[in-house]
Length: 319
Image (cartoon, rainbow, N blue to C red):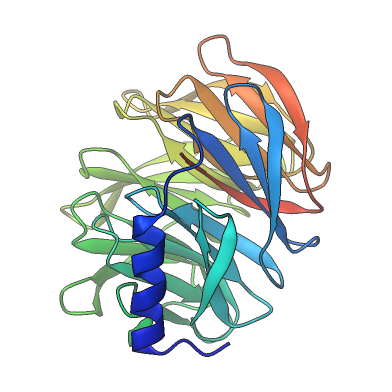
């Protein structure tokens, strides 16, 4: 369906006036093959619902106000907009060709969507649903992350083996940072001073000094064939969690030492990772076993395995 500015504003008004359906944290899992999102109640580790969203959902995130779920629909050249109060898709935003991953700005006003086959980032104004620009980046862009202050966006360019740094005010690339082979994802530390980039073929995580646009350390994932992908950083910036899709585990990095201190076995081919709001639980989307592993962060052990849809790719945590 085509979304005009007027119709999208009306839809947003309906979303903002809706009553929330749950008080506790929920985990939303994008299932690439079953074309839906599984909802997991993080308090009970039980499936709380399923939302049909459209073709090939991959990247997924919750809006900063917790009312909207955005899902990249690779088979529809769109980002689906889900009203979390009604758990229904209320709009599909044009997002360029082959949208795969994206970031939402800290104020919720923009989406930055990677177009893997076009080597661009499509920028969407969430207030009216319109595309406001397209930024050329490195080859085969995938993972996208926004800095905590919203001034920068990092784009992992798989074939260029680089991070493209976008100035969000100017909507242009202001730096290109070489990293490991085939970078897939990135995450900023809470203070915005550092960022961490996973390299699938390099089996490494690059630590970037954000102010200097420079790699300051390269952390080896010393399990052969690890294929690191999803990255999450805890709220204190103390721990970095990296999903190793090739070895079915999560690497735990001590940020102060820039070193892996633990490996946690999970389901098959973990891809996306996310932390609970209080940081006590880590969730992994396991694409080859069609489930989500729930990790107790303190003990470093899986405390639950939750069956979801087919080929879970990414996940997000919200209300």
